[in-house]
Image (cartoon, rainbow, N blue to C red):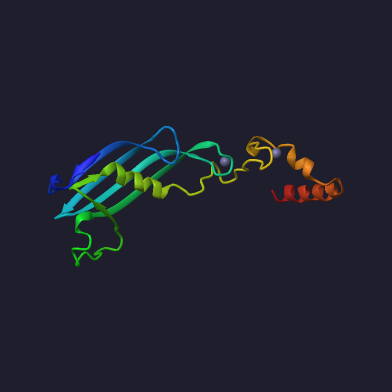
Length: 173
Ligand SMILES: [Zn+2]
Ligand SMILES: [Zn+2]
């Protein structure tokens, strides 16, 4: 959704939108429920919004896809890119605001929202905090059960020690 900056009315522009957003290499876009408000002061545009979305992410440990529900609230200031460097008084008046730029009198709201979503997505997503990941050897999803590799790896001479470890582990849990 593109907005013409000069067309933003004095009282601001409010919209509720459903935007398809693709995160990472996911095949299908997830739908973001967006509430957004644009206020223009001369050429400056303040964008306030909230995004609700369940993004499908790949777990960084087990590689399974899962839904990550998130809610982001943001406030950004957009200035015309054409003015960069020409206006010396373009100092930040409010340090709380993130700065963005638009060109050709146009702001792509979908892009603004997508940026916010990407900022809030974890770098190393986990399907659950206790995800056990995959076996590095056979690739089995260890959430679904132990593979045989671990058992083979143990030196028979150390087996008693291993049993002892298990015992301690069980007690901790
Ligand atoms: Zn996982
Ligand atoms: Zn294995």
